[in-house]
Length: 571
Image 1 (cartoon, one colour):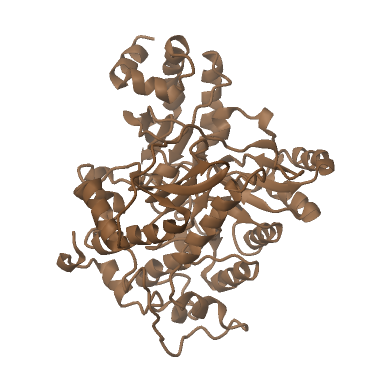
Image 2 (tube, helix red, strand yellow):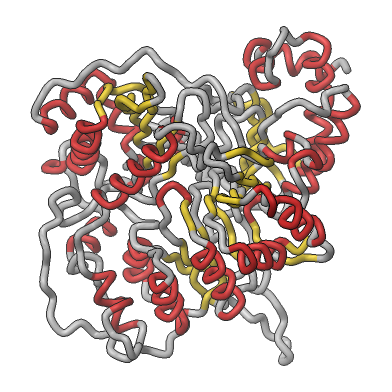
């Protein structure tokens, strides 16, 4: 729908009148209210932060017998293209979560850090500290291009992996908003006192315009033989085309997005991206800009439920969308190469980098960097980072890669990590290594049930059932979310679990770990305690009837829901 014939939603009007994302944020930082106004809550997302409250605490009884109510705090998300983070930056986040947050840092499914439960009064100090470490929170959320993700593996045998990272940096810089609001509000005043901006000086936003995008926008870069960032779930993906160990260009994939609204199932849906065009390395940024501008001008600004680019493409068809992108690009688009993704790697374990050094991939279950009981992930990582000062990468499967490790240091690093309860690759099932979850309760306001806190015990149960079926070594990807918005990409793995009601989930089957096929709805409203039982007969069926090399998701897709249900009912 063209922007000229749309009635702007309330949020669109807010962005238009926000003085390029300033609103009244600066003024509200100086008051004693523990919460921001509704308008500022929306604008703050563009600065990398969401207002939340700990839902476990809402009904806590106070000494006088009354209920506590909501205790507001901020979730803050850092922006780090391709997941690159230095030891200093990693340690800064660990320090900040201890000093201002809830004592944990979280690795997101988009290769970034989140800090939770930061009081409003400390928000400016935390944002300033993150910037002083060399990172930023700008555009980590909001109606702009968010953190650009890319394969994090630091292989040095050829230029391919470094070039993907360079492209992530280039795209992140190119699509960063030009507004100076972020710098003025959070960084200008070294004394931390002046927060009111005396004079509004608008700057040109050549890509985003005066209302920014209709909805969030996500980009990712992957290789055909390693789709470790789930390329097809992004609004725009860049599939590297490699010839003679060099990237010659990218297949540009458009229209991915996981979020859906069950009450609007006729209008909303998860989607995987489809090929748009091939672009040489030199053409890639210009073609990408044309795609973003088409979404800017034709994305729905009346209804945010259907504002993502996937709905423009569903409405128009890919051919009309391609014609419009070519018009904005100012030239013909080259047809995409006949290349698709074929494999995925979680990069967990020890790997030679190709330059005489090593990297170690660690699985951080659900991305939560914390100390709990005998498992002291935060202290273990802190000890290694302080001692060896190595560069790191965060993965889209919520793991950490410790990079640039000397051969002689491997044993000591592994010993330190093991002494803190951190397991190595051979101690973890592939089921656990390929599982991810969103935070959900208690901090996410959209969650209808558990995800991060529920998945570890569910994986325990699923491991038992896989072992019974003789499938202990099989790779089965499980993604769980506490609501249908899809932050942990639950609509395309072997097993997807989407929160539907308290303690109950919609069970999806038939996707796969490489991420090139949507799963189908198998059963709705499955109680948490019944999920493993529902899967058990299907694992047995798979063990007996699978074709050679067929994954569990491939098997479910081939057999279909009806036959799966019939087998489960009789076994």
